[in-house]
Image (spheres, rainbow, N blue to C red):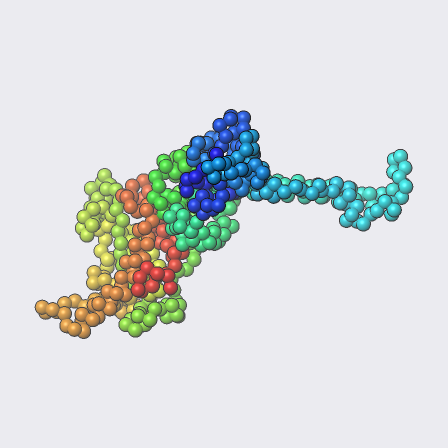
Length: 478
């Protein structure tokens, strides 16, 4: 029976067709007959189980996988399958094309060495008159060919199995789905990011194994017996951080234990923190000037960085001392507080570690280490709460903040200056919003994550740069 619903997807591995995108195709339910249904499952190379359940009206095979002779149009105008039809056209069998019989190994070796029957000597019972050196060369070549062919078949099988079982292929097929699950701008950006980290990730060691290892030499080999492919581990990490899925939900989706999910998240948080943190993000003065939008060049040509603090809610500690340290009078709750700096083009160029919520803007600026990055002649833009003009003057930099009101009202000059600074400073608010759109920060951070919260925060900030810099006019890449 052909499905008429618009929300139909083909269940054959590697096939991404759907009724919505390919309305000209027909989608057919699995047969009711048990033996025929099992034949379909075997032919499409799937196994019924937790990751694949056949439900009538929701599990289909598209018409691409059937011969045209097997499909007919009923009186009602719907395309149906003939009785006893099985799918036979797949990517792994060249879509059902008849394969040309390959030559035997002996014929291929003779063809390679241009040996013909006329060139060969008459064969005796034991072929003692044949040239021994030539025979050995031919046998060695034939053996080499057999080994290479076996290796090719093995690699093709591994590649096929990998492409069929990757969890990321089940959930991400369009740029919109990649943005939802990973917060990367597109599929191309995600795979470019993966290719940049894959070489070092191949030797990744789980943090639990690193804790147990007593010898550093034991960590030279990557962790064995991985339940998931490496790219799926990165996808799992994105599901936790970008989507905000709970670890129990992730464990059920990926079919692994809760402890394995926790291990993968902590391992990848520390790994990405080290890899991405090794890339210098603080822009030179020349880079800032070259990428500065015209409005900054008009009003604040010497701005090197725009600073602002942000807070994320955390669980209240049981210790009264820690409660008072993490309590934020501004948010009226327990928080972690961090300092973020962006260049005028909108790229995050400075990330501090997270401090307790009671720290002031002035003190977090002093402890973060950003003052050592300024050069004489630089300017820093911030809000009125950043009373850091003296600290900046000590390193030869200046502070740009909205003017304070003197008297009953602002002067015309102060009003224009306040408006211009506000229009430009809002850029850092948009950058912070991008970071907080990683939904792991939607809920209160439990104290169990206090050991890795800095790594999670830093990786979210650094990965948000892959969404492209912000334009001054709005949330638009320049």
